[in-house]
Image (cartoon, rainbow, N blue to C red; front, side, top):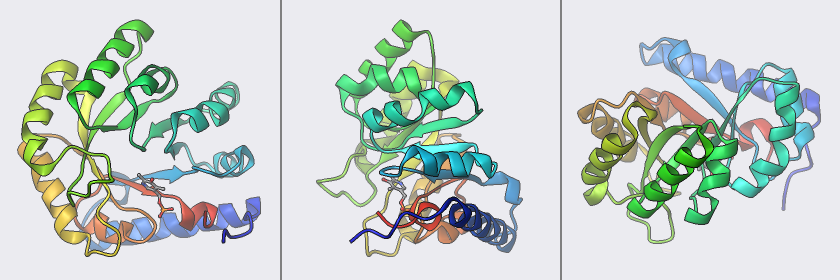
Length: 226
Ligand SMILES: *Cc1c(COP(=O)(O)O)cnc(C)c1O
């Protein structure tokens, strides 16, 4: 079952509510609300939903699939300024398209993908901001570098990508307390001097902010269920 497509006015109202909740969570954590960026996750939603959010002043978007992002976003660049994040596991054969269309790739997770992204950056003369996804729950079906391999991969990517490597991202296992996953990721980023922490979704972004998230990726609370 998917919810009916929310009307533009509902998207605007949902955005307002999510922004308020982000600000309140930041203040409750003793943080500056401006230190948290809302990434509006528009996967599976039509471009009209994206336009409604853009018109409401939302400027940062996340898409899971490169193909879908390529269909929805590039044509909007002529009329709008925004930042597009790829947040889904990336196949190496999609790396070049991702580098071409995205401002941020949040899901570097293995050396072969890092190779493909580095080659694409050289060919496209364009360097997106990069995050490393960590599979903090060790789930076999999920993308992300394992906790054990994280330090080595982070060092490797720092060497290759320099300052373009901005931080870490995770998606904790569904139905588990996300806190230990968020705190592990925050600790790991701090140890490596990485300032960006992408964690928290519709169900848990306030907890993520309490744990130090600088980017929260929120889909259904803005655009409705999928
Ligand atoms: C879909 C998705 C989100 C947003 O999830 P919601 O629960 O709809 O907020 C965030 N991050 C990733 C990686 C996703 O795939």
